[in-house]
Image (cartoon, helix red, strand yellow):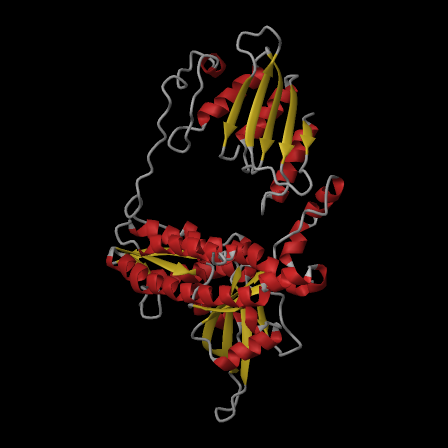
Length: 465
């Protein structure tokens, strides 16, 4: 019998993300749904490099801490090389879809994503200038690069513009080339997209980096910009939790933001049109190794397309249908506890309203026969009705116990914040179990002996937001 070989899990995952990209290729989908799939693909890939590629990079950096046989079996250098080759090919498909299908389709439907060939009206030019000077310029941080001496710290997941420039005072026969870099300030609550006034009954949308480039003289007044190119750096955001428990885990999560913001580089995306001389200058200045370089298009950070404006909404999108209530549970005259004491109900959000569960929890928080509520929390939204109901239950004298999984990737800080809030309300918090991630969604309502409805439970797969 021949030896069966497994496909590496992360190489396999790239096939899954390609399937997401294939949805963006589907011309039977409304245009803005295809754009959303580009955003999903991009967001997935960002997290993949932050976490999964970090695993292999850390293995190489700390090789002595791993068994030699494990290193030989995994072969992290080969896997990273294979990942980057696959991603580079997928990026080519991605930009083909965006540049040759999405942009022309938007234009045909009267939505113009402004490029160098578009002539703006005087009204539009005035509007763009007003936006730049009133909103953008104070958040722009230009840096004139000096090789091996002056370079900014590149923020993870943030798009940048690299500039080829010459001094305006240079002799025409002897122009010294200089390079600059600008972070696109979307991390300052500035939208990536600027909607301009209509022209000829068409809608115009401009990338914020193009607004910046139209006013580059105000940013680098002594220089003439010859060309500009996009680039982006993704840093290691993985964190090994297995060595922490209790207060040590809480302390580690308190430090997690600073850890992620200064992690080692894992991916350097650069504009495919960038000349070799500039690329070499940047990789030398920022100490970028070849094994993390991934060629892309003239735009990066397509996860920003989650907020790409649709000035013709609801056109070009799938209609959002309201959830269909379960008739029995929608009966406001009877408490939900009375209904589920007679039969079980299957709830399928978002096709059916999660509000049924929220109402059940609110009723339990004020029900005098309820003495205890126990539940798990994996991911929590900013304004959590579930957590507020649990706090209300505790304030009403119920004993409330919540297992909070602090190791929910990228939500660790939010979970810790809510845990503190619940603790202040008198809720007993149980934190993560070492070497185990609890993903279960369970709620248990315990009533006093002899109560009409008895104990009841909720079992689910979706997060208790």
